[in-house]
Amino acid sequence: MATHPDLVLIDIHLESSNGLDLIRRLRPILPALPLIGMTMFDAVRYESEARDAGANRFVLKQEGPETLISAIRDALRNDSRTDQPRRKNDS
Image 1 (cartoon, rainbow, N blue to C red):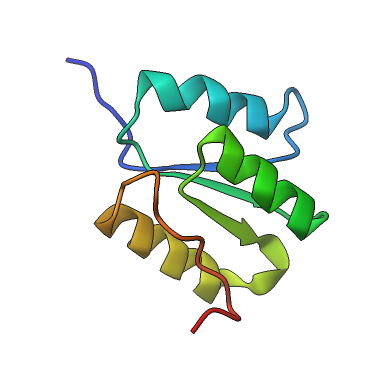
Image 2 (image 1 turned 90 degrees about the vertical axis):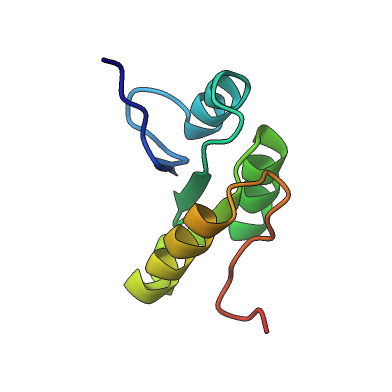
């Protein structure tokens, strides 16, 4: 029996490959799967690239665990690719 993840959390800067490439490969195979990109580098650049690649959400590592947990909960409730990114500054 094959199992599928409920969500995938992807570091944009993977040691062995590029997280953006992984998002691009996963999105067409599992279109309803919530994908969250995360990094600690150049937020503006990587958030845009992650969203363009197909990530539902984007989180900066330095935003802390509360922001990550909130993004995970939101992504699991709303697994559409049109989800808005969840950031600390958002109202």
